[in-house]
Length: 312
Image 1 (tube, helix red, strand yellow):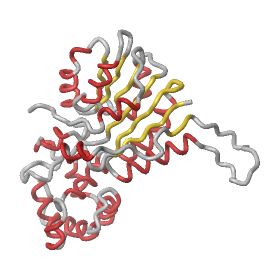
Image 2 (cartoon, one colour):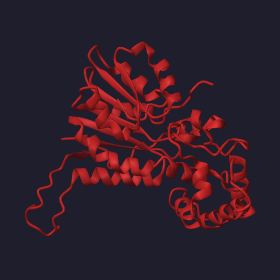
Image 3 (cartoon, rainbow, N blue to C red):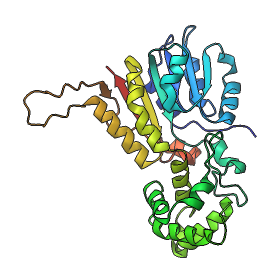
Image 4 (spheres, one colour):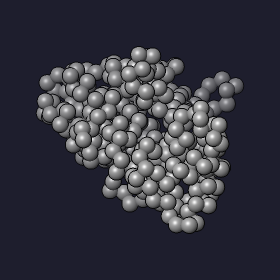
């Protein structure tokens, strides 16, 4: 199966980087290489792109897609939180732009054996972005306490039936472990009132999203990484991040704002004494969102938001 992923906010993201022909750029979530291809087209003879992804299938697909530019591209299997190490290993101190697309690729969602999708009944509860990791979604579903399940479904899934879903999961697993996406979907359906199921989207969507975010530590990785990525930028370099979830967007907005104005002095102090200096400026006062046309052609673009930071 071809690794397909419609790149969301493609031109908006690449335009936001102000790609210089001889610059060095990092794609922290390479995926199928859609955004990377557009960067490569804008690079000159001495330009470079470093592509990072933790998914072996993505790396294979991206290498194929970018084969015409292989003299400019270096692909590394890792998590973008290790960007400093990746660049150190390549002897690179600073870069001119970094970008992240935090969405799950269509390919991952559409491959039943990866266990990301709630549309298949017989898929294993996997959901690992990096299949070298041992813990799977099944471990979370079968070992987390009722409170912890409730917490992640409430916070990461933003599901108002989180409490009931957690209760149903715990009750059902007493009879034996929950192993497949289909089993989990049936449990979730039973926990949501029929009249709500009739009008909302797929009843499992929010719970599956919550488990995926928890398993892959998506929010923690993002929180840990943003400041370090800004530090790696050359003056005028940009960090562009596409989010798909309100919590992700809030993290990006907050970290960008803090890097722009890190002063911790009381607001009524006449001069700053904390000594914390601004690292740059937020380019997007409001996030860039997809056009109606893009949403029409790609439903997964609907919740996407792009925010951009420029280094001093």
